[in-house]
Length: 254
Image 1: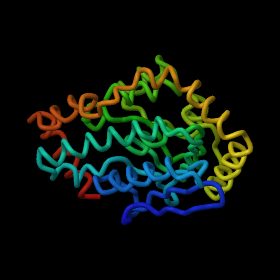
Image 2: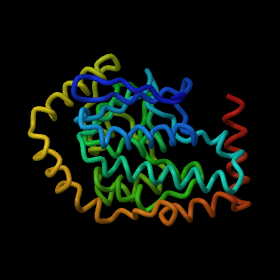
Image 3: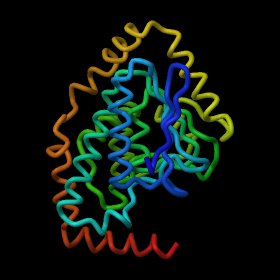
Protein backbone atom coordinates (compact mmCIF):
# COMPACT_ATOMS: atom_id res chain seq x y z
CA UNK A 1 0.00 0.00 0.00
CA UNK A 2 1.25 3.47 -0.89
CA UNK A 3 -1.04 5.78 1.07
CA UNK A 4 -1.65 3.98 4.36
CA UNK A 5 0.33 1.95 6.85
CA UNK A 6 -1.25 -1.00 8.65
CA UNK A 7 0.09 -2.20 12.01
CA UNK A 8 -1.28 -5.24 13.82
CA UNK A 9 -1.26 -5.27 17.61
CA UNK A 10 -2.27 -8.25 19.77
CA UNK A 11 -6.04 -7.75 19.44
CA UNK A 12 -6.46 -4.66 17.28
CA UNK A 13 -5.05 -2.92 14.23
CA UNK A 14 -3.80 0.62 13.63
CA UNK A 15 -4.59 2.16 10.24
CA UNK A 16 -2.37 5.18 9.62
CA UNK A 17 -3.09 7.58 6.79
CA UNK A 18 0.36 8.21 5.32
CA UNK A 19 0.24 10.10 2.04
CA UNK A 20 2.54 13.10 1.97
CA UNK A 21 2.76 15.93 4.45
CA UNK A 22 -0.98 16.74 4.67
CA UNK A 23 -2.53 13.31 3.96
CA UNK A 24 -4.76 14.65 1.19
CA UNK A 25 -7.35 12.08 0.07
CA UNK A 26 -7.21 10.81 -3.51
CA UNK A 27 -8.74 7.78 -5.23
CA UNK A 28 -5.76 5.58 -4.44
CA UNK A 29 -6.16 6.23 -0.70
CA UNK A 30 -9.90 5.56 -0.88
CA UNK A 31 -9.33 2.24 -2.65
CA UNK A 32 -6.64 1.17 -0.18
CA UNK A 33 -8.78 2.10 2.83
CA UNK A 34 -11.72 0.21 1.36
CA UNK A 35 -9.58 -2.91 0.97
CA UNK A 36 -8.18 -2.60 4.48
CA UNK A 37 -11.52 -2.02 6.24
CA UNK A 38 -13.12 -4.86 4.27
CA UNK A 39 -10.36 -7.21 5.38
CA UNK A 40 -10.32 -5.99 9.00
CA UNK A 41 -14.08 -6.45 9.32
CA UNK A 42 -13.81 -10.15 8.50
CA UNK A 43 -10.49 -10.84 10.27
CA UNK A 44 -11.39 -12.71 13.45
CA UNK A 45 -8.02 -11.86 15.02
CA UNK A 46 -8.77 -8.14 14.83
CA UNK A 47 -11.29 -7.04 17.47
CA UNK A 48 -10.95 -3.29 17.01
CA UNK A 49 -9.32 -0.59 14.87
CA UNK A 50 -7.60 2.72 15.52
CA UNK A 51 -7.37 5.09 12.56
CA UNK A 52 -4.85 7.92 12.74
CA UNK A 53 -2.66 10.20 10.65
CA UNK A 54 0.76 11.80 10.91
CA UNK A 55 1.91 14.54 13.30
CA UNK A 56 -0.12 17.72 12.68
CA UNK A 57 -2.35 16.17 10.01
CA UNK A 58 -5.01 13.50 10.33
CA UNK A 59 -6.03 14.54 6.82
CA UNK A 60 -6.37 17.94 5.19
CA UNK A 61 -9.33 16.62 3.18
CA UNK A 62 -9.78 15.80 -0.48
CA UNK A 63 -6.83 16.33 -2.80
CA UNK A 64 -8.71 18.96 -4.78
CA UNK A 65 -5.69 19.64 -7.01
CA UNK A 66 -5.60 16.02 -8.20
CA UNK A 67 -9.37 15.63 -8.31
CA UNK A 68 -9.77 18.78 -10.40
CA UNK A 69 -7.85 17.01 -13.18
CA UNK A 70 -10.04 13.88 -13.17
CA UNK A 71 -12.29 13.33 -16.17
CA UNK A 72 -16.03 12.65 -15.81
CA UNK A 73 -15.68 8.89 -15.44
CA UNK A 74 -12.86 9.26 -12.92
CA UNK A 75 -14.65 11.77 -10.71
CA UNK A 76 -17.86 9.72 -10.76
CA UNK A 77 -15.89 6.64 -9.73
CA UNK A 78 -14.06 8.56 -7.02
CA UNK A 79 -17.19 10.00 -5.40
CA UNK A 80 -18.99 6.65 -5.51
CA UNK A 81 -16.04 4.88 -3.89
CA UNK A 82 -15.56 7.67 -1.34
CA UNK A 83 -19.23 7.54 -0.40
CA UNK A 84 -19.18 3.74 -0.17
CA UNK A 85 -16.11 3.91 2.08
CA UNK A 86 -17.87 6.30 4.44
CA UNK A 87 -20.84 3.92 4.62
CA UNK A 88 -18.54 0.94 5.28
CA UNK A 89 -16.75 2.81 8.06
CA UNK A 90 -20.00 4.10 9.57
CA UNK A 91 -21.35 0.55 9.66
CA UNK A 92 -18.07 -1.00 10.86
CA UNK A 93 -19.23 -3.43 13.58
CA UNK A 94 -16.06 -3.46 15.68
CA UNK A 95 -14.86 -0.67 18.00
CA UNK A 96 -13.34 2.13 15.93
CA UNK A 97 -11.24 4.81 17.62
CA UNK A 98 -9.97 7.88 15.76
CA UNK A 99 -6.68 9.41 16.89
CA UNK A 100 -6.52 12.89 15.37
CA UNK A 101 -2.97 14.30 15.55
CA UNK A 102 -3.80 17.67 13.98
CA UNK A 103 -5.92 19.04 11.16
CA UNK A 104 -9.07 17.14 10.12
CA UNK A 105 -11.26 19.34 7.89
CA UNK A 106 -13.71 18.13 5.21
CA UNK A 107 -12.68 14.65 4.05
CA UNK A 108 -10.65 14.15 7.21
CA UNK A 109 -13.77 14.82 9.24
CA UNK A 110 -15.74 12.44 6.99
CA UNK A 111 -13.49 9.61 8.20
CA UNK A 112 -13.36 10.81 11.81
CA UNK A 113 -17.13 10.96 12.37
CA UNK A 114 -17.48 7.26 11.64
CA UNK A 115 -15.52 6.42 14.82
CA UNK A 116 -16.95 5.51 18.21
CA UNK A 117 -14.49 7.76 20.02
CA UNK A 118 -12.29 10.62 18.80
CA UNK A 119 -9.14 11.97 20.49
CA UNK A 120 -7.79 15.23 19.04
CA UNK A 121 -4.46 16.96 19.57
CA UNK A 122 -4.46 20.25 21.46
CA UNK A 123 -3.42 23.29 19.46
CA UNK A 124 -5.09 26.52 18.45
CA UNK A 125 -4.29 25.94 14.78
CA UNK A 126 -5.86 22.49 14.46
CA UNK A 127 -9.43 22.35 13.17
CA UNK A 128 -12.07 19.79 12.30
CA UNK A 129 -15.44 20.01 10.55
CA UNK A 130 -17.39 19.69 7.33
CA UNK A 131 -16.60 22.84 5.34
CA UNK A 132 -17.75 21.53 1.96
CA UNK A 133 -20.05 24.54 1.37
CA UNK A 134 -17.11 26.89 1.84
CA UNK A 135 -15.01 25.06 -0.77
CA UNK A 136 -17.86 24.61 -3.29
CA UNK A 137 -18.40 20.86 -2.93
CA UNK A 138 -21.95 19.57 -2.55
CA UNK A 139 -22.38 17.76 0.76
CA UNK A 140 -24.41 14.54 0.77
CA UNK A 141 -27.31 13.49 2.97
CA UNK A 142 -25.21 10.73 4.51
CA UNK A 143 -22.61 13.20 5.72
CA UNK A 144 -25.26 15.54 7.11
CA UNK A 145 -26.83 12.68 9.06
CA UNK A 146 -23.46 11.52 10.40
CA UNK A 147 -22.52 15.02 11.54
CA UNK A 148 -25.92 15.60 13.14
CA UNK A 149 -25.67 12.28 15.00
CA UNK A 150 -22.75 13.70 17.01
CA UNK A 151 -23.40 17.45 17.28
CA UNK A 152 -27.21 17.56 16.97
CA UNK A 153 -29.42 18.80 14.14
CA UNK A 154 -29.31 22.47 15.09
CA UNK A 155 -25.54 22.71 15.30
CA UNK A 156 -25.09 20.60 12.18
CA UNK A 157 -27.37 22.99 10.30
CA UNK A 158 -25.45 26.03 11.55
CA UNK A 159 -21.94 24.63 11.10
CA UNK A 160 -22.48 23.09 7.66
CA UNK A 161 -24.15 26.16 6.13
CA UNK A 162 -21.39 28.37 7.54
CA UNK A 163 -18.69 25.99 6.32
CA UNK A 164 -17.40 26.24 9.87
CA UNK A 165 -14.23 24.52 11.03
CA UNK A 166 -14.07 23.98 14.77
CA UNK A 167 -10.97 24.41 16.92
CA UNK A 168 -10.30 21.73 19.50
CA UNK A 169 -12.15 23.29 22.42
CA UNK A 170 -15.20 24.01 20.23
CA UNK A 171 -15.14 20.46 18.88
CA UNK A 172 -14.93 19.06 22.40
CA UNK A 173 -17.77 21.24 23.67
CA UNK A 174 -20.00 20.30 20.70
CA UNK A 175 -19.40 16.57 21.01
CA UNK A 176 -17.53 16.31 17.72
CA UNK A 177 -14.50 15.01 19.61
CA UNK A 178 -14.45 13.20 22.94
CA UNK A 179 -11.02 14.13 24.29
CA UNK A 180 -8.43 16.84 23.75
CA UNK A 181 -4.85 15.97 24.71
CA UNK A 182 -1.27 17.03 23.90
CA UNK A 183 -0.07 15.80 20.51
CA UNK A 184 2.28 13.21 21.98
CA UNK A 185 -0.59 11.73 24.03
CA UNK A 186 -3.03 11.23 21.15
CA UNK A 187 -2.00 7.65 20.30
CA UNK A 188 -1.42 6.48 23.91
CA UNK A 189 -4.89 7.72 24.87
CA UNK A 190 -6.39 6.09 21.77
CA UNK A 191 -4.78 2.77 22.64
CA UNK A 192 -5.93 3.07 26.24
CA UNK A 193 -9.48 3.66 25.00
CA UNK A 194 -9.23 0.64 22.71
CA UNK A 195 -8.04 -1.50 25.62
CA UNK A 196 -11.12 -0.33 27.54
CA UNK A 197 -13.43 -1.30 24.67
CA UNK A 198 -11.81 -4.72 24.37
CA UNK A 199 -12.45 -5.55 28.02
CA UNK A 200 -16.16 -5.82 27.18
CA UNK A 201 -17.67 -9.00 25.77
CA UNK A 202 -17.28 -8.85 21.99
CA UNK A 203 -20.86 -9.83 21.21
CA UNK A 204 -22.38 -7.45 23.74
CA UNK A 205 -20.21 -4.55 22.56
CA UNK A 206 -21.10 -5.05 18.89
CA UNK A 207 -24.80 -5.53 19.62
CA UNK A 208 -24.80 -2.38 21.74
CA UNK A 209 -23.00 -0.38 19.04
CA UNK A 210 -25.63 -1.49 16.54
CA UNK A 211 -28.44 -0.41 18.86
CA UNK A 212 -26.81 2.95 19.62
CA UNK A 213 -26.35 3.70 15.92
CA UNK A 214 -29.68 2.33 14.70
CA UNK A 215 -31.27 5.79 14.29
CA UNK A 216 -28.26 6.87 12.19
CA UNK A 217 -27.99 3.66 10.17
CA UNK A 218 -31.69 3.72 9.37
CA UNK A 219 -31.21 7.09 7.67
CA UNK A 220 -28.21 6.02 5.59
CA UNK A 221 -28.61 5.90 1.83
CA UNK A 222 -26.71 2.69 1.10
CA UNK A 223 -26.40 3.45 -2.60
CA UNK A 224 -23.36 5.74 -2.65
CA UNK A 225 -23.96 6.68 -6.29
CA UNK A 226 -27.47 7.87 -5.45
CA UNK A 227 -26.32 9.72 -2.32
CA UNK A 228 -23.55 11.56 -4.18
CA UNK A 229 -25.22 11.96 -7.56
CA UNK A 230 -25.87 15.64 -6.97
CA UNK A 231 -22.23 16.25 -5.98
CA UNK A 232 -21.03 14.52 -9.14
CA UNK A 233 -23.39 16.54 -11.33
CA UNK A 234 -22.57 19.89 -9.73
CA UNK A 235 -18.84 19.18 -9.95
CA UNK A 236 -19.09 19.92 -13.68
CA UNK A 237 -21.21 23.08 -13.39
CA UNK A 238 -19.30 25.89 -15.18
CA UNK A 239 -19.96 28.16 -12.20
CA UNK A 240 -18.53 25.64 -9.74
CA UNK A 241 -15.60 24.77 -12.00
CA UNK A 242 -14.66 28.43 -12.18
CA UNK A 243 -14.68 28.78 -8.40
CA UNK A 244 -12.82 25.52 -8.01
CA UNK A 245 -10.12 26.57 -10.45
CA UNK A 246 -9.52 29.71 -8.43
CA UNK A 247 -9.28 27.56 -5.29
CA UNK A 248 -6.87 25.14 -6.95
CA UNK A 249 -4.74 28.03 -8.23
CA UNK A 250 -4.54 29.43 -4.70
CA UNK A 251 -3.45 26.05 -3.32
CA UNK A 252 -0.77 25.64 -5.97
CA UNK A 253 0.74 29.01 -5.04
CA UNK A 254 1.29 27.92 -1.42
